[in-house]
Image 1 (cartoon, rainbow, N blue to C red):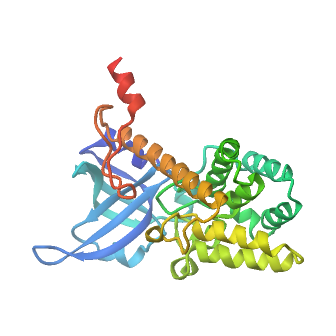
Image 2 (tube, rainbow, N blue to C red; image 1 turned 120 degrees about the vertical axis):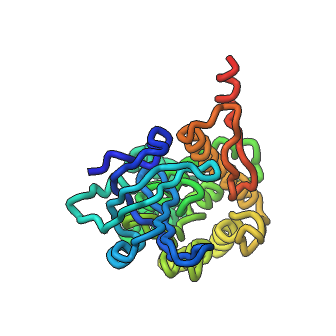
Length: 327
């Protein structure tokens, strides 16, 4: 069974390992010197790294495809500051050789406890129409169970099982803590937007063996999917105040904050402005924690920045670790 994880790479630099991974991506590329090679991304619950197979990969590509489990043998090395593995062998792994829990990262928090806390906040709503709306999603047998287990993203932030629920709960906590400072924003409406802003991800993403996008997710995207889901629920809840529907729908459509970030609309209400700002902050901090952990696993010193973080267009520095190291 699996005894080597991506997070162990720093301890095995230049060593040859034999282990199992999920094959997250696979492509055949052209060598600069002629011929072809196999470029892959291998992953497990601790992360992912790039893999290359330079020769004799005909059998491997014939039996392996994206999303399957593979057994590999290869050498761990570092290239441009990142660990990777160069494979000599790769084959499809049989079902009895793998334990699915080894390959998909999961939230560190208990999903049942997170859901119970979230429902407690909804139960405290003073606005009965918004309470009906949110519970219509949470109680839906086709949406509720997916909402509790779905990742929040393929890789940017909260990219683990129950990551969507964790992200939403953290955002609701921050919204409730912030609301007293912005009395212009209605708390029930703000929390409704926090819970439903990413609800479309239950249909945008898939998470069977690795995280990826459904065809609907690629073609439509979670914002537009969520807009459609909201309208379906409002029709089912009729009569439902149309003014509330417009305000909730606006928060969904504007929560990315800027056109270039995929928002069809810019935030125009107090609730939409607070939601957009706090959603961005909460997602960035989740990504930051991941980068700090990756830098530590790679053996970086506290005085060194992380690798370049593409989603933020900058490297990061763990200030607490930096100060603690000086002490």
